[in-house]
Amino acid sequence: LLIGAGGMGKTALAGKRLRGLKQQDYAVHALSLRPEHDWQNSVKKMASLLTLENKDKYQDDLAAATEKTWLGLGKPKIDENKRAASLLSLLLQQHQGKFALLIDNLESKQDPGGQHDISDAALKTWLNTALTLSNKGLKLIVTSRWALADWENQHCLPLGKPIYTDYVAFARQQQLPAVFMDNSARLHQAYVVLGGNFRALEFFAAAVGDMAAEEEQEFLQQLQQASAKSQTDMALDKVYRYRTKQEQQLLHRLQAYQQAVDMDGIRSLALPEIKQAEQKVQQLLAVSLLEQYQHPTTGTEYKLSPLLRDWLQQQGIPVPETDLRQKAALYLLEQWDKDLKTDWQHCLNTHQALHDSGLTTTAQRFVLDWIVGPLNNAGRYQELLSDWLPPLWEAEDKRTCAEALGQTGKQYHHLGDYDTALDTLKKSLLIQQEIGDKSGEGTTLNNISQIYDARGDYDTALDYLKKSLRIQQEIGDKSGEGTTLNNISQIFQARGDYDTALDTLKKSLLIRQEIGDKSGEGRTLNNMATTAHARGDYDTALDTLKKS
Image 1 (cartoon, helix red, strand yellow):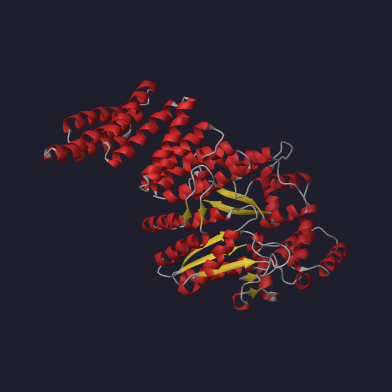
Image 2 (cartoon, rainbow, N blue to C red):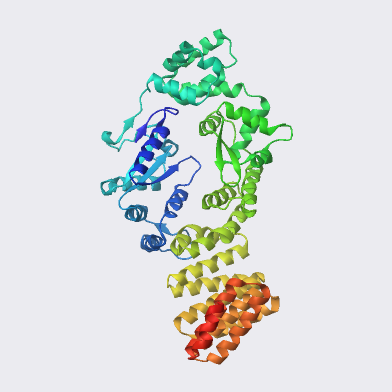
């Protein structure tokens, strides 16, 4: 646990330690906490590091750690200790006992008064579990402004004042104003007064750049009488006060983004009267109020300095209005829809932004459109049942609710819990029939048939498939019709009626080819080969497989 005031280099030291561990063949993962972040999102990020085999094991452990509740009456309860032990142990095993975890900015999840206890119960459990795994190779590095009462002293490293030569090197690296760097006495005085605080030096140099000598000395005297935290805040206050009104307005509005965005994202939030946004951004970068990053597809991106974000909140400067936060969330969604960003982290950030800004219906739709599919394909059924689908069961939009219940039924089907799967799918079907959602009804009838098929009740399965087919033909759902015909063929094949199965597959194949469904075409050809093989027609089976 690295302890010290903001700007004392905790994160830099932690990063240096991680680089050293990487050289020792450790796999490393870093998480930066913020007050608005949900720890469970951090858990999802860690789970995404698992191999496919370990993801399956984790899903099994997650199912065992989940207390099943009656569907629709609340989110299932998870034993966080078991969940943490499973995920961290699997990551250790995956990397031969060499896994390092950095949790930065822990103070954002600690109570500011008293013993500075961790306010997030789940996070506290994960930290305690991680400590118990340290004897198995796990390296845990945590940074915070405050110590933890229940951590032993040998696990804590308070950061003291850095040596002067390191301070000078930092000042040169940050390219502070030449008028400041060329005066060694001035730099040394700042070092003494600021107690070696790196970030305070950045803000101080920016603040005094245009000050007269007397004003600068008066400011230094004020800083000398302040605590380390207050020094940074006072220097930051000076930098902020010297910004133009338009620059301040831009900073206020950029609070709507919790992650870095490109210049188009900044322009989308800028007021019409804020002219030359690009120039304003460069001026704010020069005084460390904005931070700059590089993204492989969108290029240069910008983010509000975390210190400034905290300071703005402390000053009582309100967070942006709901409409502005929604505008920011919709910009992230636009980037996703245009495939400008396709990484999983942006997907999670977009969902979080939509949810937090009150765009609940859009956020729920985003889960169904973009999150359920990848997790389902990855076999993360239990994660869908415990984390993603329950909030959608009570969605105001009936279509969303029905689809979420349908997806829930599919996950239980994958897990082999056919009774729960069938009950859930029937609830979905009732809603779809109530609201007249013919497309959804056809899909759900098809999914219900698969439960009866898995149980060996082929007659009931075929009845449901025929109902589904009639609806899909009625509404012109060619894709659904092709899928249903394919499923019908499997019933006839299971009964040994290979001729009817093959005829049905040929109908499915024609539809797949007509609509250009290459994936479906391949699956249908494969099923045709299986049917030919079952009949003993090996030459036809081989030819069809080659086409597939």
